Length: 338
Image (cartoon, rainbow, N blue to C red):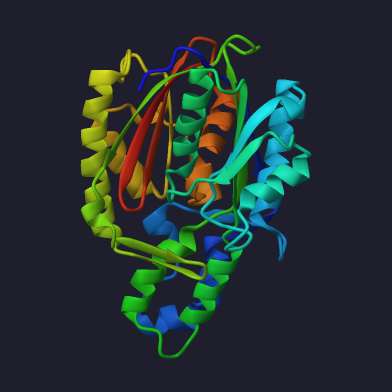
């Protein structure tokens, strides 16, 4: 899908206030690691993650999403009542129902005519939200769209820690729970606009998406844990990323490493990031990296990474590649001209 009239007016993020180091987490399960013969420092060694963030106890995903959304709306300088849709894309939810989007809608005081709903697709949700909103803007149905995400990892991480503290915890338990210990927290928001009203020069050029859903059992998440076959998921994810990259070269303009100045990837670990760069033949230096200090922040990763790249390295006219992958598995790649 190619877009002609979709602009990124603003992208913003909010980081949780509490830094939780991998060393601290290992201290909490030190007895189990010692009993199982797992060396100290293995969590950071295997993942490349030094720390991740936690919100205050009791914080809701909608609150994180709202904080980021307020920043994005202020940066865009628009009247919130002009927003035609708000899509919440978080894996974490305030409740099973109603949708988390209704709390964000209410917190922001948006118009009664502003559509709101949740769109969930594991770590790919935010890119799917951009795509869905982009279609509505391209068709002329709405002028402004707000995509939001709020992730909080403290509950699943600490529940996993308590489970691994049990004297009956096995090496299989440790391996299955490893990915949960890499989770981080954060809020993200992006305001999209029709080019006829856009003030920014940032353009969403197009998107491609591919699925390989035979791998739907490789990462299973619940509110309190995430069981992952990390090796199999990495292998399947890299294969699908390669296929999606080939499709992007057919569909998206100027889609090559030579023409892309920066990548904002979904990133879960050092091993995953290196494997993607090698498989796709892209320059690692072009990848905006934050997993060492933020961990795996799910669908909030790509927008937060893009916002941080805008703060530090992007120049007007730069071609940016957004690379997303989600459990199940699905993969999307988006072309943006900054």
